[in-house]
Amino acid sequence: MMKKSAILLTLLTSSVFASSFAFAAEENVASFDLDQIVVTSTLKPVTVFDAHANVNVVTATEIENKHYTQVTDALRQVPGVVITDYGRVGYEGSNTIRINGTEKTVVLVDGVRVNTTNINAFLAANLIPVENIERIEVMKGAGSALYGADAKGGVINIITKKVQDKRTTLSLAVGNFGEEEYKIYHQGRDKKISYRVNAKKHNLGDFDDGDGNKVERSLRGETYGFQIRDEFSEGTDLTLSFDKSSNDFTYRDSFYGSGVVDGKNKSEQWTISSNQKFNENTTNNITFKRTKYDFSYKSVKDWTTSMWGSNAVDYENEVTGWSFRDQFTTKIGDKNTFVAGLEYNNDKVNYSTSGTVLNKKVITKALLLQDTFQITDKWDLTAGVRFDDHSIAGNSTTPRYNLGYKADENNSMYVSYSRFFIAPGYYEYFGPYTYSKLNPEKGYTWEFGWNHKFDKDTETAIHLFKRKSHDAVAYDYNAWAYTNCEKEEAQGFDVQFNKRIKDLTFKLGYTYTQTEQESNGSKSYNVRGYLPKHTVNIGVGYAVEKFAADLDVRGALNRKGVAGSAEFEDDNYWLVNLSLNYKPIKNTKVFLKVNNLLDKNYSEYTAAPYYGYYNMPGRNFLVGMEYSF
Image 1 (cartoon, rainbow, N blue to C red):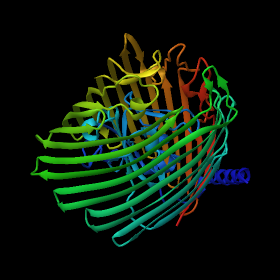
Image 2: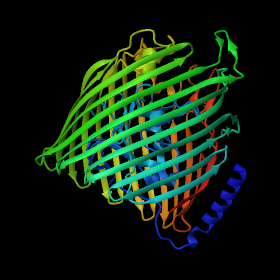
Image 3: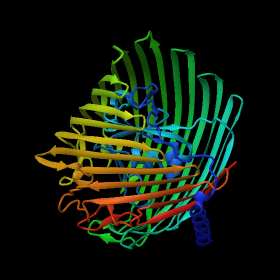
Image 4: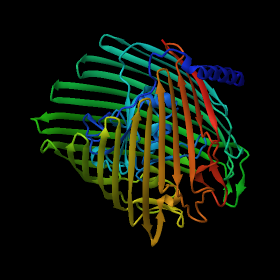
């Protein structure tokens, strides 16, 4: 049935694209905006140009037109962000998001943290269905003074949609490698009450890598949720939302003898949020979140034994937590904007693997104070301080200073200094590979940036950072244990250029990153080769009336692995992705998405030289239809 549906949709899509310019057009399916409004860098709405920070935005239009299935897909095209993926379902807890060379990254949803104890950034980012997202703000650079522990590399803030009208959208898509995706989304409004509901089913099967080698896997995933908002008056509202996902997966461990592994990944999130607008200058937000996450897997057949015993695996990670956040903002006169906030997080973890059973609770508390002072029409200074209290790592105070200069309407610059405090992770504290007491990491980051507008359709930006820290937690492959590094240094820069020429948009980004860790006299560079020294992001978009096309190119260059420990089949690789959208009639869209267009064989993780490479999928496509009414 799936193959017949794929053939039918492919023929339908091909015929529609072939005749795309023969239809009269009514609306454009692509967007391009040089002045996106963001809130992550300053805790108040400003344009990217005026944010005085290294911020990129992925819009809802980009998410829809490029048919990303999860948030981490969208992040791959953001300069300075590196995703490392095992390419298998069931490895989500080990996949990583790195910003400015570190995986210590905070993920927020509407300003509230979601990657809590033993839930990494990769898992947290993908808990939110992309259908509910208005935009994704990515702030690169230390944000611990604003957002607490782990904001060493940056912050990912997922902003959800606000309902403005009544609409229902149905979507059906199929592809090769057993992919199927079925979605329904409905939103509505009755005076001051708005609501939305969503549901999705996503299936995957075995895939072939770029060389035609088969990789066994299976995914049966479901997500659904709802949101209800009551707007009492302008700026004052109460929102209740719920999101749930359930994924059953199977994969074959080809390297370590665990055989066929079955697992389940489940999550639930309840959120209550209240905004209060006291007057034109003073607002307050209170958010309460309840999260439950359960990830488990075990070997079911074909596992082997070795000199250490059975290679069968049996793993479970259950995290139950709740959090509270209050943020008060007031404008004092014409010069000052003052923000005060407090946070409380309570996480209970039940964890078991390889005979190790852990039941621990981690509690964190924080207080934030920040003031933005408009010194003159051209100069502004933001100064903030955050106090964190961690139930295991202790407490720390981290300041942040940002000096911004807007020379004119076409040039803005900034320099910033931030300190950070990073508590070791739950597994690092209590897992089977920790033999000594770990200290929290502390350090600082300097940043400089310049934004320049050539005209209303052309802009460029340059950002630099330098970071130093001590007691960074890293895995010592000689001792087979987590230890504190004596020191860690990182530096880098990115250059971005955006251009619009009538119906064409161009985006070009280049990022250079160099990291160095030193422990017990030995040094490691760029996370043992997993972090490319050079990355290139190229995006070309074309939109006329009802037709839109997007071509994305990403290059990962100079991944110098450690000989005998972490070797890659290819130190450099380029990937090309293509998306096509067409609206033949009102409310109907057909689309085609092709990932890895050139069928490149590559890996982002490696088990070489002893085993092999975790190769990623070869050329894969998704073809579908969307209908709204």
